[in-house]
Amino acid sequence: MKKIIFLVFFSSIQASFGQEKDSTTVGLDEIIIKENRIEIPFNKTSRNISVITRKAIETTPARSIQEVLAFTPGVDVRQRGVSGVQANIGIRGGSFEQTLMLLNGIKLTDPQTNNHMMNIPVPFQSIQRIEILKGPGSRVFGQNAFAGAVNIVTELPETTSLNIQGFGGDFGMRGGHIIASLPVGKYKQTIAVSQDASDGHWYNSDFKVTNFFYESGLELNENHEFNLMAGWSDRTFGANGFYTNAFPDQWESLQTSLAALSHTYRKSNLYVQTRAYWRRNIDEFRLRRDEPSFFTNNHVSDVHALEVNATYTSSLGTTGFGIEGRDERIDSNNLGERDRQFVGIFAEHRIEFWEKFDARAGIYSNLYDEFGWRHFPGAELGYQLNSNSRLYTNLGASFRIPSFTELYYQDPSNFSNPDLLPEEAWNYEIGWKLDKKRTRAELVYFYRNTNNLIDYIREPSEEQPNPNRWTPQNISQVTFQGIEASIQYLINFGSSQAKLREVNLSYNYIDANLVQAEGVESRNALTALRHQVIGGLQAEFIQKIELTVKGRYIERFALDPYFLLDARVDYNRLKKVGFFAEVSNISNTDYLEAGFVQMPGRWAKAGFMVNVGR
Image (tube, rainbow, N blue to C red):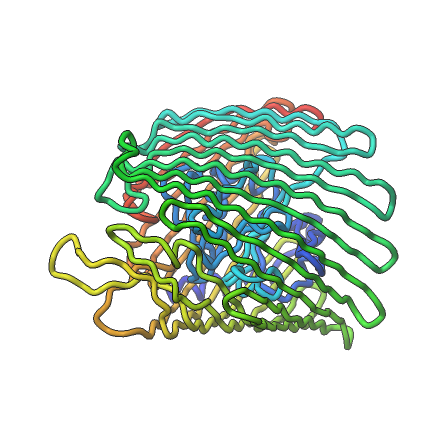
């Protein structure tokens, strides 16, 4: 692993200082990172942020957001099944409960459990890009952005268009989508419907996922704009091995609804956005699929929220401020009827000084019913070495409230703990990034010191299976530190008949130091990544065929390491009619990612695309 770190770093230095000028750009310079208040060009951020562009989404061998995120450095995707049926997303050693998902800045946190955080009612092909913020996000997004945040961004096209796709593959996989953009004067709108289904790669792993998404925008004049967003997702699947290996006939059905209405006001140097949203998740879980009377959990959770975010630009810099109110409720035959409310206040300021320096500082203050006021400051400092190279550092506090499951859920294998305290952490980061015409490179060191980390623990037992129940507890202290190194190089080598377009390589290392009582078993604390290597290349043939190959080496603290190799071929991707084929796990690796789910070996799928007015 030390050799890999050196190789990535040396390659970054060599590429940055030893290349010729070229008109090709990496394509990230003009991207604006869409935080809820202050928006910053990608190449001027003082954080470690990854951006997955539309092209990358289209050409990656993947059928879901989860599978695309699995190729992002520093992001740990642990799937139960294929095509994003259910997956946990961790960042920099954080658990799935410590990651915040957003859709166009709207928080998708599920108060029941973040196992449902990825029930995103947006067809995969409707996504314009994905922004991944690594490190503390509480100052920017509020609680639950503990170890990082993922913001999914969609956009409303200006012109009429229609996109249709269909596919089929191994394990009885089939599906497709229809996405239509239908602007009427100043009223822009997009309607999207998709469905993915499979007979399953092993016993009781069949699934059907249906998504509906509608987005619209009306610009009344140069100062006022309204936006509406609504989505619905239905996921029904056999859950063999998802939560326990004692009941292979587990089954689950989830329906997630989302509705949001926002108003944006722009005038001179002032920007104000007001929005209200509602998210509902209906969850039915059975231990025996065809015997609901044996054991069934029914949960209905609702989140109502109102936010006001504003930005004011002056000669002194850019000031961002905002306030949010949130109500979270659940009605469950296991968890009972619960509700909680909180108010959060944001304030931050960014300045540029001495020509090459910029600084940003702010604070998020949160008032919860049970815990009173909590304050979470943070600051960033950047230094532009030259037009292409940048040094940066930041620090910040992060915060997470326990889920209703951690507080109240009980079954024959688990106790509840209503006395859990919130998790808190201090985070530090220092990094260097390079943005040149052909090269993007980044080298980062991070450190996180967590207090009151929530983990499930139990006493060991010689009896198998262990009869002792898991109990969520606040662990006294856990520290995570690590190194992230990555390089993306646009090679453009070859002829018009065959050309190597791009190569990329990244390496991530995480070290964890757990301080807790001896003689107990831990379920979650040390299941994070230790080593992660991701590499890929893109090639083009006869200007019509695109080949994407991606490989991953994954080594976690408590699981056996494994290597995965995936590939995709696109023909006429941007034309009116195109075709694609992809193969996952070409290496036919035997591996587990989450729970007790045996992931599939080599599997293939192929399909077609129709683009009208694109």
